[in-house]
Length: 159
Image (cartoon, rainbow, N blue to C red; front, side, top):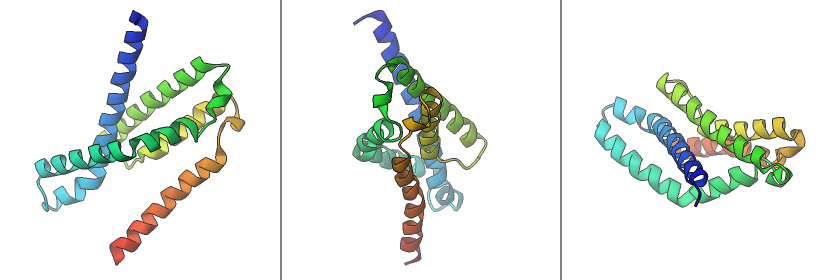
């Protein structure tokens, strides 16, 4: 393996870990803040619970989520003639989403990581290829999930 390939893999791995760290921090702040704030659990307990659940969720659902983000938001087939554009675009998605999550979470701003990632992929695809690169129907289904899941949660919580 060439030095360039090793550097590239290392850079991508560090960038992915950076994004994952910020995703976890944001998710933990959102899901555990109330429990810790009300003193129902300690900060240490929240970190352990969240660590186990975040890891389990990533292992169980991560592949499906990654496949959806890689192929269902924008059509990667349209980038066949320009694979470098797709790679640079996806790296930009990782970097900008990681930075956005870090900034928003550190300032206590409400932020949804899934919205940021989907929007960033759609945005770079639109700029690179045009609006025909975006799978609007799939984005509609993704957005529908963003509306339906809180409704289902509210119904379950109210029961």
